Length: 208
Image (tube, rainbow, N blue to C red; front, top):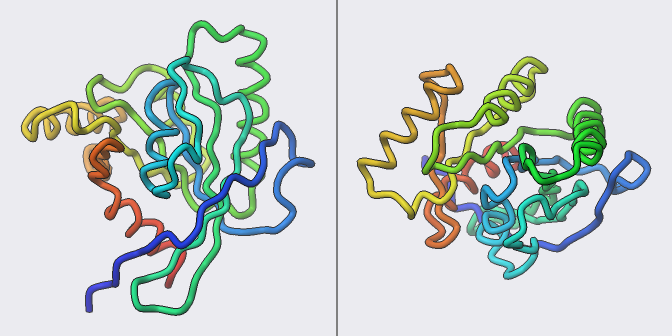
């Protein structure tokens, strides 16, 4: 029997944190979004939740400088059971114009969060589909895998390429990350392509 469509029932900004004392008190499953600066994280969060400007989209890369927690609710169509969870937006990595001192601070509190969260379900690592995975993307992917943290790679800005080019770039990303059988999910925030697929993955983790 095919699983019913997953519906987001609520989405709200909850808190920003730079250390554990600022994390939300209530424990809920956490799904993390990480990627290079300007990869389209905020746009994807707004597309996924269908809440305009829930995450602030900035033309200035490196704008997110804190761990941002959003509280979401999800349920399957036709079901009564609703599960709340946190969508966690981490600062972008690999942005050259951010002061080195800042980057070290970010790296420390991002690492602390990723290695100590008891509720972390998996990390969505966003990579721009138009380009080959960059050194910082590969480093982050390997760092997560080495620590046993499950990763779903999302290829953003998929509307910028035609079908053939899109498929080619997905292969290029898999090759760069060194995992040919890796599942890569193309996503277009502009057209909401990939949204139902991502919701299905979240639903499978949340709504058994």
